[in-house]
Length: 167
Image (cartoon, rainbow, N blue to C red; front, side):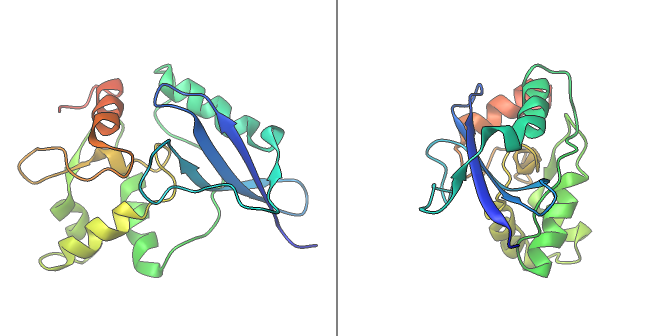
């Protein structure tokens, strides 16, 4: 049996979210993408995908808790994606505490790509397929300014405000 791509929509304070996942044998769903409306590079539903809201009940519940201020970390299984470098950057994102921010340069340092690697880190962060749950919104410019969020800087600011992060 091959994995089946499933999707669902969920309402949230940032707009209708599109969740895409792989339904593996045994019925477990691994989240592959979480997109927001108008997001640069966001997922779109493709022919052959199965609409399966029930497959995302756990993820949607955790998102609702997060937006209500009752959850500061996600415990959702993710599908493996990206290059080895992207995965290193994405793991570094997951280590940024709730309500905190770090610079792109700091992420580059953490993954061993300081200096010229900051641009590559920014590109990897921009390709993060799991907005909100993998907190790329917590990465800011070295001068403290909000920079680069695929779903728009207004949404980045709202997420940081929700977490009580200095913005």
